[in-house]
Length: 138
Image (tube, rainbow, N blue to C red):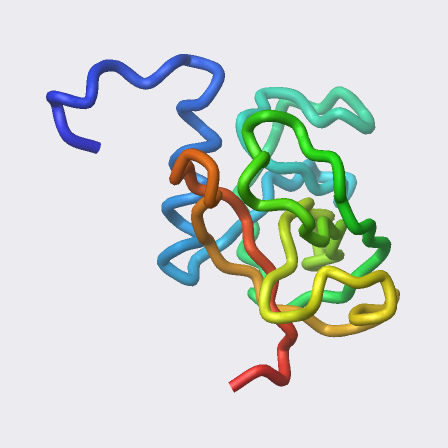
């Protein structure tokens, strides 16, 4: 991040670093000794309260756990609608993102489909977000 962009809000510091890592193909989860995975920013495991968190890499390919087509978005996604949002199991953690490369139709994707995680931008404001694409897409 450049110096002229200003300071990073404390709430976003760990998340922005995580998005950078995901964009570089080096996504990771924060995992406690009990095996619970979560995403930054975290200082404590949300499942058991452990403060011993380590970075564990995850595969960029995961499985769709659930999905939904959004037709009436929040203002931050106004120009993106309709779009598919999904929760994807990437191993140590589940990640929420927008599915691209398919029609925004409930039948275009199914629970259990394999997708690749990457980083894209919102149409509305150009901000970065987690993007999933079908794993078999060329």
